Image (cartoon, rainbow, N blue to C red; front, side):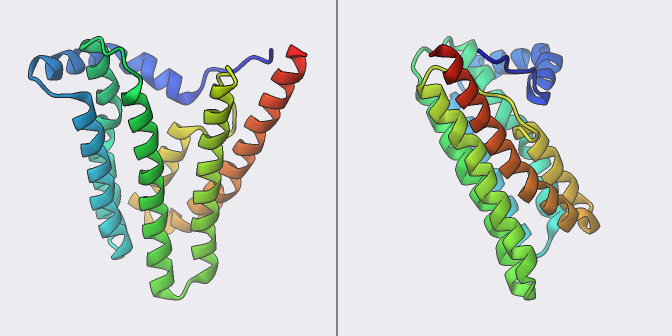
Length: 201
């Protein structure tokens, strides 16, 4: 089977593992359920989307930045409570897709309000690509394959959108990178799955 490389997400998790684990244990002792954190994370993205759609890009970016720890802490709390069911992972992945929709939908609304149709199409292309990246991984997982390859995994996408929002002149270039890069990543993952399955035959 083809090797799946270490991603930026893996590296960040390894570097922050002790801090996140400690915070997760503390939140578990405080009685916080991991699903609560997952839902709060989506809430922070929804709030950010409101500001993004209104053209307050930096405020939206700051809210997204402040909400980032919630995306890591829900898993840490789940490990601290030794959660055995798989619902948390399903909920997290599902709400991540809603989060993508909120962000790119808000950007699309913002561009539409300005009459910038090309930029609106970029936001839609980035959304389609982001869904494609996640969908290939999910379907591959059903086939017993762990797929983390690709140009833009989730962490790279998060970094790009944050920089693009916090530095507005970089918004359109950032969307170009996302629109092209996410769709390339989806195809890279599809090719990885194809090669892996061919090697199994």
